[in-house]
Amino acid sequence: MKMKNTGFSNLVEMLEENCCRYPKKIALVFGAKRINYENLLFISKKFASALSHTGVREFDRVCLWLPNLPEFVYSFFAILMLRAIVCPVNNMFKREEAKFILEDSGAKVIIVSMDKLEDAENILSRLDSLKSIICVSSPKNKKNILDFYTLVDTSKAIQEKIDIKKEDIAEIIYTSGTTGNPKGVVLLHKNLVANIKDCIKVIKVTKRDTFICILPLFHSFASTVCMLLPISRGSKIVIMRALKPFKRIIRSIFKNKVTIFVGIPSVYNILSEIKLSRLKLFLNYFLNPIRLCISGAASLPAPVLKKFTKKFKRPLIEGYGLTETSPVVSLNPLIGKRKPQSVGVPLPSVNIRVVDKEGNTLSPHKVGELIIKGDNVMKEYYKSETETEKALKKGWLYTGDLARIDEEGYIYIMGRLKEMINVRGLNVYPREIEDILYKHPKVKETAVVGVFHPRRGEVPVAFIVKKKNDLEKKEIINYLRVNLASYKVPLKLFFKEALPKNPTGKILKQELAKEVEDAFRKRTDKRE
Image 1 (cartoon, helix red, strand yellow):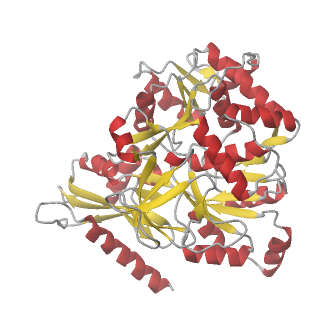
Image 2: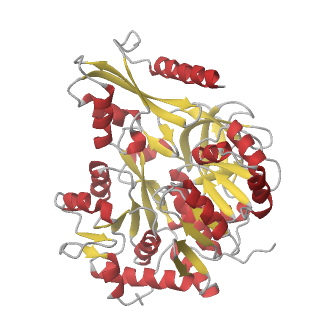
Image 3: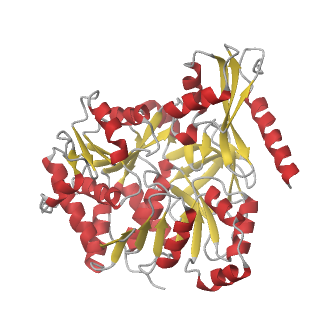
């Protein structure tokens, strides 16, 4: 099938191009709402005009602290239309976590949902750089809060066409760094456009496809693969605000004739465990509209892949990526050889190498650090020259991931050089959790490690030496839930008399991790 030329050089051009081609075609589905491409562009232009009147100018940063809503998409493109910069904020963040991003980015405006309004007001009172809050469905009595739809309804669509260059910054997406504080990944229009065009070639996306977006849009994987990629082809996006109840997801798939399902390993694990009657299996084989499933953001266990594909008879292709690479680096081929435990081959315009500590390229099957080069690679880390110099060397991105490549170019991720914990595709740094724990008056010493759980994938686990004997696990969990996003809260807590250390006093985290993994394994063996 020959695909139409994708001649756009920036993300606004991309939307405008498909609005011209398919003005009446449905772009977004959200519950009973159906928004066509013409209206998507029109509302985005009206909101761009409203943002301009609130003082947003070229290169200003605007934060989106929103769940999966059509307003996320309108806001995303409206910001770009002003040649301003989108800064998504993790919707699971608590107030202080969000404040760091708003302060570091110097955001002028934040767009929030009602559940984040109180926290946003608190941050506004403490940050001089933040000037305005725009809330989706804000209460009438809040005079200092701008209402999203009041702004849209009272604004005319922006007429001025701003010259957006491919080298302009489109997004700053914050991801946890080696210091424990999030780092702002600076992505240009050029980076995102390159990644989108590569994904089009590999996945063979067409205007007839319908994507379902169950992953959070603040995440780079969902933003590119579930939003920008389908819009680039005039496809339809079914936006789901929440993953639960899962029955609603299933109903939506059939109702909207979803053809591409994008998930993370934990979702596919749940699906592979669902018990289906013979009738349901028969209906699934012949009536299921999905043609392709994509797994990303974290490693997909081989047993889950095997079980899922056997049950649902649909191709499930695994990929690999980083926020720093816009984010997709590789995918298993849709047509051709797919190798279990491999994250596939690089996208057409992406170059990869596996190198030793001196930067020498290693031969096939040798394990080393994976490095990446291509137009999809970020420009820099925002306001962090030191971190940028560590990551980018002579045009190559040093990922910190250990990998090997076979003779056919298939990539196998073996682990990480960093201590980062990948929880359902979201980065968690142990130091951040440890810093919070050390502030508790009853904690003497602590260490947090990432371990592999047979059903949940990688999870954080905390070890604590008590300062006071009356400390209970429930007290610590409640304390962490107040101060951290839920996915950062350790799955398990262990009290110990002392932590294992080497002669210099460094905590031996590998010993702690092995202790927990052995316990998880024994528990799984007993069940089986």
